[in-house]
Image (cartoon, rainbow, N blue to C red; front, side, top):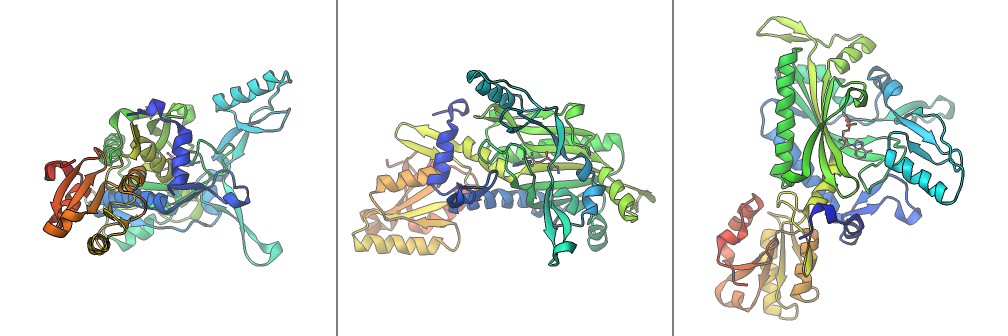
Amino acid sequence: MKDKATVDMEKIVSLAKRRGFIFPGSEMYGGLSGTWDYGPMGVELKNNIKQEFWRAMVYSRDDIVGLDASILMNPKVWEASGHTEAFTDPLVECKQCHERFRADHEEDIQAHESEHKKKKEKMEWTEPRKFNLLVEAFLGSVEDEKTKVYLRGEITQGVHVNFKNVLNSTRVKIPFGIAQIGKAFRNEITPGNFTFRSREFEQMELQWYVKPDESEAAQWFEYWKEERRRWYESLGMRKENLRFREHAPDERAHYARAAWDIEYDSPFGGWKEFEGVHHRGDWDLSQHAKFSGMDLTYFDEETKTRFLPWVIETSGGVDRAALFFLIDAYHEEEDRTVLKFHPKIAPIKVAVFPLLANKEALVSKAREIYKELKPRVVTSWDDRGNIGKRYYAQDEIGTPISITADFQTLEDQTVTMRDRDTARQIRMPIINLQEVIELVLGGEKLLDFGKPVR
Ligand code: GAP
């Protein structure tokens, strides 16, 4: 087995393309830097991650509700939230070739300097300047009257501007949360490392409203840090590849009083952030109250007090999570490459084959099983090539269970079920298939349900 230190990113990128996970955006027109398209496997992986997030945050709790705010918002929102002023990265430009870099990305800077040195060229940088990351768009049909708007730089503001709407339309009481999943856009100076730094990406967030009290906020902060780490681990991300890192005060976003990143030990330069837990204090609500003139205070029925709540936020990147789940699942074994996804996030759950594609009785039996399973669980059919090639293909997309109808099936109504992780098989009566599949998708081991026959 290869561990993460030796996982080769080129192999990940190539598998992602070959098997339909991730394609470069607008590829046939030369691409568009920082954009990616998710193929048939990628969209399933991402949807599964989002569904599990929603299940954990909204469906399994009484104190969190969901929201889906629009991407386009009144530009005043971004003034109020501080993004037009402070949502910046430090930019430097090479005076020799005019390439632009983030001044705080030392590795990129050094690599660029050494390229020029190799060619014995002079190397000089401009002074760092603040570069705003908000992406602009223009709305309206009359050319001169078009309104400049921004594509949202974080999905967060759509939640805070609806704080009162949610309070007035539901029965939530502090502490409570609003969860949201959606696209965000940033004009990143240097997109790169595959999907890691994109210009269009998806976020999954929780805005958790608490009393304005330091010790209570600190407790909730710890609680959510731990919950989020547990969530990633519950979906199979290996413990040893995860860590927390606290932001230094000069690293924090303009809205954050405290910030911790959840990081993954990536094959491209080690530990990289893929989720942030932030103490936003009353930054958002107080700014929106000030700029809109609306009273955004909360009346606490128990204590009969009125206050502006504080916010603890968990903000994860769906694309970064998908990338790190993909890398974490990647294993090279002697004769195969296999993605050992947790069954809950695997794009396809079950594959069904006839042992031989030219034996009508086998094909129709396998087809019967396939038709039975397909409406209940994401199932794929394959009768191409030989059985070894089909297993190989399913391993590369991480399908946890493969079912084969063979000659014995025609005699005793049993099939083989192959376990992706061990490549071993057990025999199972067709009548028990659905029950066993459900248990395996919930995290139980297939081999516990029968003695391996191969
Ligand atoms: N609302 C807080 C917020 O947006 P952030 O740390 O700027 O916080 C949260 O972003 C998460 O969004 C990051 O941890 C990362 O997973 C994802 N993200 C941010 N910028 C990204 C980019 N350029 N490409 C892909 N994902 C990104």
